[in-house]
Image 1 (cartoon, rainbow, N blue to C red):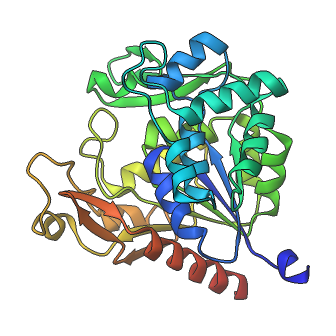
Image 2: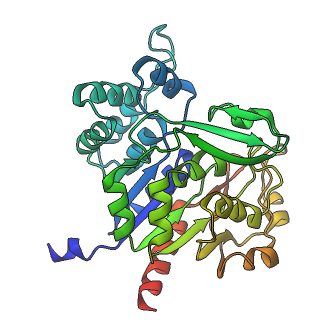
Image 3: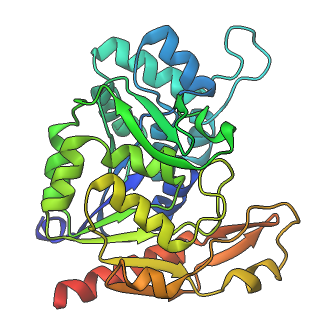
Length: 324
């Protein structure tokens, strides 16, 4: 029992592939993991369920749950299975439908996630950033307002800011408590404007994160993203976080060791997203601690984080920080 109480608590904010990749690496360590997942998705199966059941979109939550699950591979594969041929079910994943069904049964999306976590034997906690339907909007540089997470990257223009409606959206008490108890708070990797920022735009989350003394790490994206962060440097990613939080709050930024040029030279496909440029001089003016580690790999021509290496570095960083 004492060993459980002594486990270090790590809370991670984001969504999409980046968050799922990171938690797969972290769950191999004896730590208490809480993933706070964006619920701003409105595309694909999630979008259809939004319209039909008026629930928060389950897609990103489902992916993180699958990543943290400790069940037979076939069970996880079934949970992630996406129907292709049925007219009524086409495009839906089984996991999304199960979460929608549990929401109807329990009357509450967060309760549905909790119950599904037991079924999947989740190694940690998965908490939606909000327990209600929210909408993400983007104000582009030319003043255009784009409504809907899936539509924001389509315009291909620089984003000035993103914001949520309703503005007074509340998070779960469990999320606030998890932030307060965290030994380490991690943002990213993931889509900056449509996965990471929507989590800290929830007022209670933002206020609690800014008030806690826990170390805060940003795992910088390896590549830029068309429609969101095209040609963004590392410092511009961090500045966007600060602009939306209202103040500087990141203690450490983790970058890949390889620079802009060398990553391109090792097998990335032509047309693949460009690596994020490491403008270290500008970045060091924004963040007290900038760390570069060998944490990237080329998979199928795309630059990806190596989850085990990132996770191992986070554990080492947390242990060293607690000794200071």
